[in-house]
Image 1 (cartoon, one colour):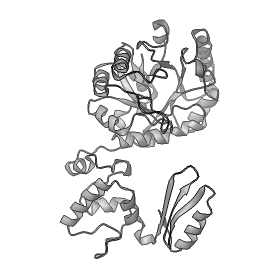
Image 2 (cartoon, helix red, strand yellow; image 1 turned 45 degrees about the vertical axis):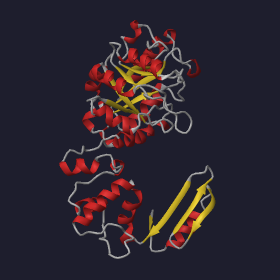
Image 3 (cartoon, rainbow, N blue to C red; image 1 turned 30 degrees about the horizontal axis):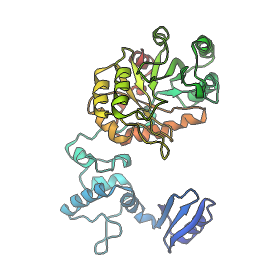
Image 4 (cartoon, rainbow, N blue to C red; image 1 turned 60 degrees about the horizontal axis):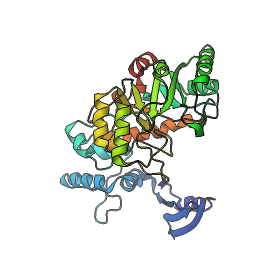
Length: 367
């Protein structure tokens, strides 16, 4: 969507975009075309006074908009910006759209017709997590495994972003493809974390992304697991187990006595690998009864756990972390995507552990 009183100039600028491979439709206010990777791009240009109303209409889920339309009709209000027989009100902000319907503001990520209008009506819609609520960067890799930057570089980058703490969670030994940290290198990493800690203000936590092995055990002897500040337990192999096998594997891991974060829980890679098969409801019941939290992974290739399962999990009182899964200093910006997924799952600040300060976070996640 664009707002301009010169739509042709905006469309001409869009048509010069190098990634636009072909145009499917073009008129005086709109262009639809395909980008080089096949994605459909649709640009509409509207008058400034109409922008908010049309933006709201074009970007909400159909079911959400239909319910708002029903409320509007009951109040004698027309919301549709292109209504042929009535002139809709003009809004200076999307908050006004909801105010005129007698509803509290519903954030864009929640407009999916998943009960948000009903929750807003009865006052139970949560205040969604905001990026500024996050106090610490979690799930971060360094050159000790498959990361691109040193511990100090990652620490300084997170510190510059205003974070209070950073978890160093490199891969465990079984992740050969990622240069997992064997026990022979673990002490050297911990010593370096201590040295870097003396030179930075941000709190550094020594952790691991431990593979969940085929039998459901974690990929370090108990002697070492007990010494980490945080354990992220993830599956990186044998994704094609059947549902029974995968469920048994995960149940064993989730019920281990160590507090752990279930990392990128269903193992999906967007447009590359689907979520693996498992009995998710049973696993969430186990998480709720165990010393566990669940990761909302901000890596744009993963974005795992998906919003539906986040909502199901939060109904069980499960806690979460919102992570970056950063393998470089630049990938710390993945936090934006993680927060967006958390918001789509209705997570609020109180449900996310890394909104806590460093001391309380360490107490919450200590193995």
